[in-house]
Image: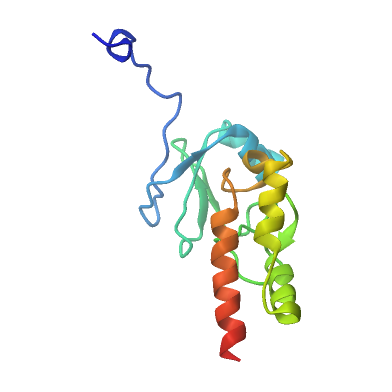
Length: 156
């Protein structure tokens, strides 16, 4: 019998909540993430439990098994994949917005923002769990934003 079989498996303290609006499986986020992105009165009602709905077309940002449903506009800051516009962060740790990417692409024809973020990560200066409403690294969102903005700029 392996060590894995000998150890009793404990159920997780909390499981991801499937979005009741779109059905997205949800990604469990920490109480730290919720505390930083929900107004204090809403956070208190959450019990520190929530899942992030990763469907960009759904207005729900967080849900939980207690019936909490937080929609776009209810969070402290706009959420990268939920909110449009250039004034929305793509990287919360290093304070980069879509406008920063667009400005650099218009001025230089490319952007170095993804590399700057990677340097910051290597230096141990990121705090994604707390600062990003998704509770995870932003690099995927940054890459997607760069791709969209490049396509928009090249169409003009």
